[in-house]
Image (cartoon, rainbow, N blue to C red; front, side, top):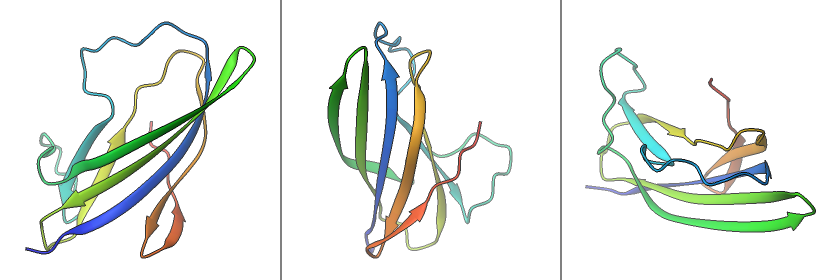
Length: 111
């Protein structure tokens, strides 16, 4: 099967906070077959995080954290990938995008 690879870049401004609880996978990646959310439990095996890089730039009591993730799948059909990322209290997402075939596409925020 073919392998499709996507790049996701994001930035968050984080206030100095204690570490988050490790009870839930963070980040969590789920896939919806054909982009359809049927209301059932999403499949976390259809797509995977192949690699993840993090850069941190400290700015006084805050830090700018940039994550770059490589997402991969062996499926030939189109799936919708949803990335859930738990942030510390007071953290703010300042932007994110998806690179497909070298073109950056702005992401959409879901609460």
